[in-house]
Length: 525
Image 1 (cartoon, helix red, strand yellow):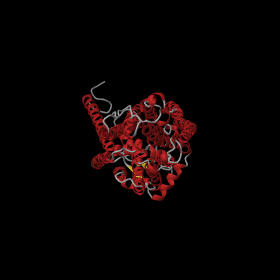
Image 2: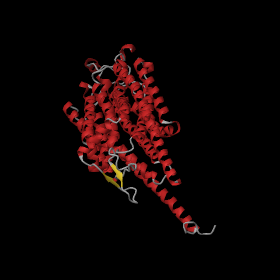
Image 3: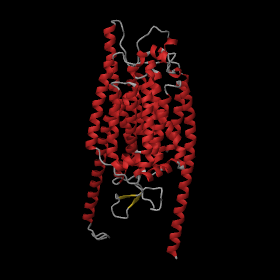
Image 4: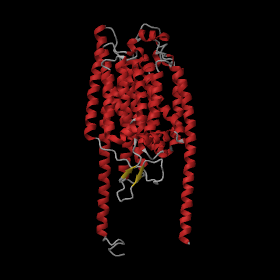
């Protein structure tokens, strides 16, 4: 072999090209990672305060159920906005502006808690719902953006990078909740300790595992907590100190800090958030269910858009809703929304505030968020190794066990610490479900991201809306029975979706083999 290779280039030039390509790939992956972490940190600052104030709503605004009612309105408005406005809005204004505008809704909702009257909280809830519809539709597009961008320089399929960034995002998402919950716990617990020190000299301070002793008998003290919580007005008034901080200034200071954090995050996102450049898979132009088609050019990132009108967008959204696989996975997404609302409303009110006190909601949420964040980062690796179906089956069994425990457990002074165990287990599966849903969505519906992720967001939001709206009207025990039935039903539907998807993959594989055989036969002829 001479010093010239087949392509006519000397060896030393080829080695230089290889070195340059390696450096180019390294630079590309670093740039992607840098953009991703800036995106993550800014979202953490903007969203963590809203997440923390949302976790307190079922307690600090428990009277007349204003807190959970406003959250129900938020999710209901998000559903309507997501169906009729979000897809076309994201297309018209871009994912960058959609996220920034949506995050302003978080700030408005936090500000509304300065004067939590029903009409103000409901209006704020409607606005934050519209904002969330924009944010949670645009967010998955950024996972695709970073996944595709990394895939251009990496060695794995782009789907694996999309799943990786999805897991890292939700890990940081929970880290943001830890940060927000730490602020909440520090402010509310600190003010309670100060108030107790002034009011009585013989009162023991509250710590993370212990509440103040009351004169009630143990079997009566927690009789309306846990599964027995029905939000009876008389019971709520008698035990209002468990739900609402005695010092209102502590709430005002907390809200002010949350507003400052959220405003900083929004400003940073406006300045540094990159434009998402999603790249749908190449498809045949005669596929009328797909809104995008690659141009036949050398530039792989050049995309042309078809059927951009509002009417055609609604038409394709309608088709997505009634896709056979979509119909079967919708109960899973609905359950994910129900489960999230259970954590932020029932767990925080009936188990944490009622048993430990409102100032320890932040402490339990720290534990929950830490475990959920850890699982969010770990789940993609587990799915890659063992498969999504095994992971979802395990998560289903764990949720069934925690629901049964919540039904049967009767809190006592010597078992109050088990509230933290509930938080740990809920975090364990909450960090798993979202990754699994994103994984099967990426596999089932690789095209038309604005449409598919709008429907993904719709069903999760609908589940949360229903759970928040029924929260003041049903006992916790009834909700737990509903959750158990829904979980079993959703897993049965998911099994049906997997069967259809695997059958489709076999048919596609056979079709490709037949085409390959026909091409080979023509060549021999």
